[in-house]
Figure 1 (cartoon, rainbow, N blue to C red):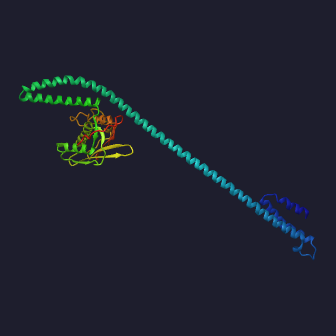
Figure 2 (cartoon, helix red, strand yellow; figure 1 turned 90 degrees about the vertical axis):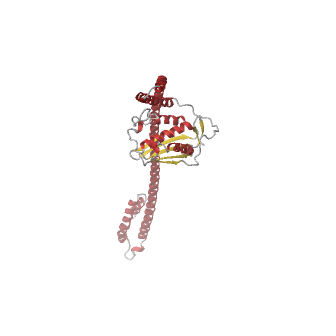
Figure 3 (cartoon, one colour; figure 1 turned 45 degrees about the vertical axis):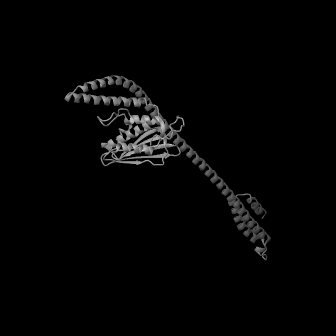
Length: 357
């Protein structure tokens, strides 16, 4: 019995499965021992040794349950800590992924802006070189051209019949050259801005009123969709009017009879930019031609025009601190967007009288 008790006492410090096995031994072995040690007239259930073993077994069960609960609580705590750690690491991973994505997007945007800046810089350098060449060529052409015109005018006074017709044809060709030279000068060296308060609605209305009776516009539907309450902008009315006329002429030449030309405008309150849109329902511009339409002397109208209309328009718009963009779908029409600041940058904020009445 002493050895048995010692075995039970040593089993208390063991782990839960060992204690359970010890309890099983304590429940089985003492019963046979008690049968041999008890008196024949004494009941086993009343034996002090049996009661002691039973009490010890119940204590072992209670201790086993307590240790199991402790172990379960420890495991739960460890699982909770592990879950919190996993959640924290997952959150850190998500933050790192978001930061990485944001960095990649910023880098992509910077690369895009750099490419655009490089393209614009190359374009400006090309146009600057071309402008210098145009200035020299214009002066070299203009001087002898004036002499030719004067001589042809004198020759026409005394000419008759077929000779007079030939001289008039030469005069018309000379005027065409003069127009191209003047366009070169306007493109290479735009005049100083004569700024004034311009109402876009009235400017568009005047332009449409001027062209609506021209032969190329008679079979087209012209629409002025500029809001009446659009605030006026500070601009050179002559340059802005020429830009609008160039855009209308290009739209009419690209739009078949029965088509339409719509002019609209809107204000971007956050930037103060006013966007003027000229949209036609014409044949559109092929994608391979679209990148070249602002190049000087580039034209698809052989024998018509000088190819300087859009180049001069772009020069005028940029002199106001604005930009001009073209969107076109072949067979569906073209939209030209002219973006102008409410006031040209670098110009004094002076009160001007409204130019367009």
